[in-house]
Image (cartoon, rainbow, N blue to C red):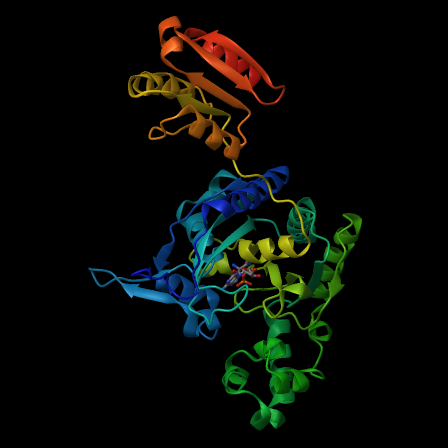
Length: 422
Ligand code: HAM
């Protein structure tokens, strides 16, 4: 039978058989963040479109072509969030979080939306995890941020991941570099792809990470960003590297990492998995010292990263790594006869309220068919309840762990399972 409705292009369902894997990624990320003393923050999935237009940059792909923008009933223009940093900055400023503490270390996860051409590892609704540090400008905090992402990857057991870092410097180094790029690329203008021709004037750095073959070829000999850093920026970058080495975080320097969002300054980084194909960045981020003030806050430095859960999941699958476990019932409750079943509902509700996972097939009649279900579910315990047991106010408990069977009183059932199931 053909379904009447189909899922929007570029989105996916997380079916029950996979949900626990997502849960595993979320809880592992949370645990890692907590070891670095980051606290969770949750923001809405839509914001004023202007927030993203101002922060991501007018010439970024996100603003140019990927935003899910809509007008509400009062004519306000909103956008489904394409990324998590701008909303967290908005919340940080709006809630004056800097007043309560000079440094704020925050993490989050949730769905993001980008209208892009769907492909493996690239979706229109995807799930990001991310973290941001506000208030610290020391190179140590850059390294700490990168080390946290690295710890997450390590905790998951992933091996084939490469960390690339770069520094974009601050405004003045960036301006000099942009000028040098313009001079370098202009003689090649006719050979650039239409996107790069447009980017050349507004954001020449983006030409360095264009995926089009001919652009890549031209970009090969482009000026090296690191040679344009001011002494201060170069020193910051060296210090970041020093801390990464101290923390045992392996990295390579790639002067061509420029990132697709406009808010970055100084350190930028990407964790890459080449086995994923074209969409190989699993975690990416960098410093953004001007964004908080641009969004209306104080002059507060910040750094962060975000990563895609689906790309992580693909990476784990490729490396055949264990990903948590699907929850299964502790007890299968087999009751025989309509009246007995009715009486059973009371006991089952009591068990569930006390935290036991109990499966019960109200519609299954015979004991045999119920035992078959229990067997299929591989529950450790089966509780059998029939006419005899009702009379005796008891239950027969089969324990498949040691193949034992015993009869207990209904009034002792919670106590009994509390001892058996931790
Ligand atoms: P981003 O590089 O745009 O940065 O995205 C970060 C990560 O999100 C990517 O490396 C990728 O794993 C995942 N991702 C992005 N787009 C998609 C998509 N369409 N489908 C699946 N996964 C995707 C940011 O979003 C910045 N907010 C990161 C940041 C935080 N910088 C500072 N703080």
